[in-house]
Amino acid sequence: MDRKILIQYALEARKAAYTPYSEFQVGAALVTKAGKVYTGCNIENASYTPTNCAERTAFFKAVSEGEKDFSEIAIAGGKKGPVTSFTAPCGVCRQVMMEFCDPKEFKIIVAVDEDNYREYTLEEMLPFGFRPGDLL
Ligand code: THU
Image (cartoon, rainbow, N blue to C red; front, top):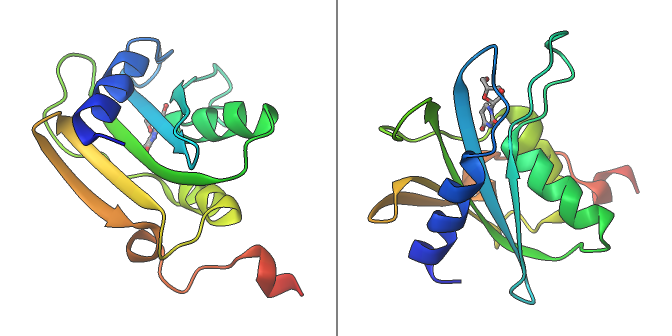
């Protein structure tokens, strides 16, 4: 999917971030192989540990609607206000990606804005990862 449009989706999703504790706001836009976009934001909690990252929100929304094939995700995050640096997905989110995505094919786009972004494969972000097939 066009990177600029995808980053716009992530930045728009970021506006819904519920972050009273960290004020660190993240938006994500996940694309299925069929080209459908699922967005997500981070959702914090007074008890802290139930906090859900933007990336997992997007994945869980998509999987809960029957999607299991994904091509890429765009992520934009930073302290409240305009995004000024790249936010990489946390280790837990990388592991969730590993459950559903081919590490050599799935792309992770970290963005400051639609003209300033970097793109990685899941394998680059999580080398030698543990995958469902490893249980067989
Ligand atoms: N967070 C995300 O949503 N995604 C990331 O990739 C990094 C961290 C959230 C979790 C928490 O609400 C806040 O950012 C600070 O860690």
